[in-house]
Length: 93
Image (cartoon, rainbow, N blue to C red):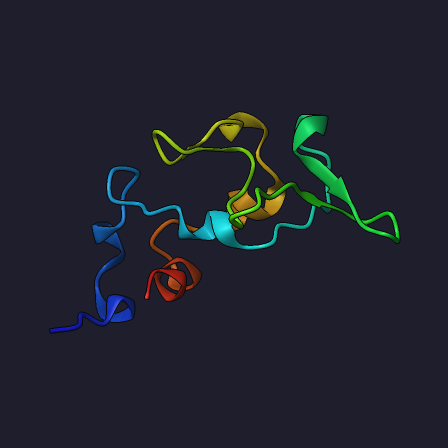
């Protein structure tokens, strides 16, 4: 039986139940939040984004805990991505 996660209440998603699916999305850096330079990539036009590993995961993701290793310095878009919100549940499904 497949559960439609979009219809599941957002309280189901917590730091303990998060699968870090958003850490596979492309994250453009549009404001300065202090992201360490080692996690920043530049495109051919000078645009900045979070560095990604060869398998597509964000380079700042701690793979042992599946938590952000730069949480206090995370990009603005990551701060706005609401845990348990619509976009989060869409990525989980």
